[in-house]
Length: 199
Ligand SMILES: Cc1cc2nc3c(=O)[nH]c(=O)nc-3n(C[C@H](O)[C@H](O)[C@H](O)COP(=O)(O)O)c2cc1C
Image (cartoon, helix red, strand yellow):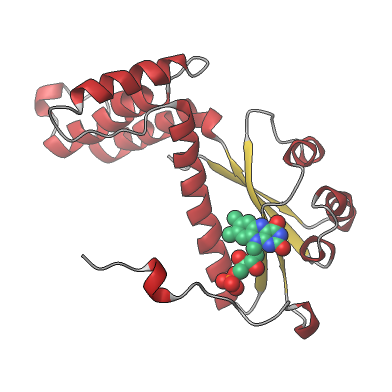
């Protein structure tokens, strides 16, 4: 669904405006550029439509159902029915109704359970987090450093950057080349045995 958007801030003036909104953190203050990772769950209809239009390109438009391959049927059903079922909501109420439905159906067979409004937010943020990680790894591969920042006044950041209120900021990533004095210390890791289980 690609419910994301990336705002690349290269203007020094805008970075300066964003620094206090990132609570004056060094990572923001010393950044050459910033990339704001934005979750656009609100665009789910548009993105589902884009996928369905892509299906038209891949499989051909307006093909009668009986001529569709099972792969086409599954794909069209996913973006045409399943996605609207998962994302459509009204003040979170529909989400709870869906959750109750899933709860009953789940008594008899394995079910997808993350259907409430809050669940869908997590799904969208999870996806955007993966994009952010991919970006940070790519930057490292190119010889640059990054720092993910969760600490910001997201409402004010959205206002300054002209991001709609219905969008959510996932994280702001500062970019540049680290200085030795900018590294806080040795990297700490929770012992492996504590976080790894083999079954
Ligand atoms: C989602 C997320 C948000 C973070 N927010 C901040 C932040 O606002 N400020 C900050 O200094 N570090 C923040 N960090 C932590 C630092 O970036 C941290 O140094 C880094 O994740 C450590 O990575 P490493 O130990 O793998 O090198 C955040 C990390 C993540 C994953």
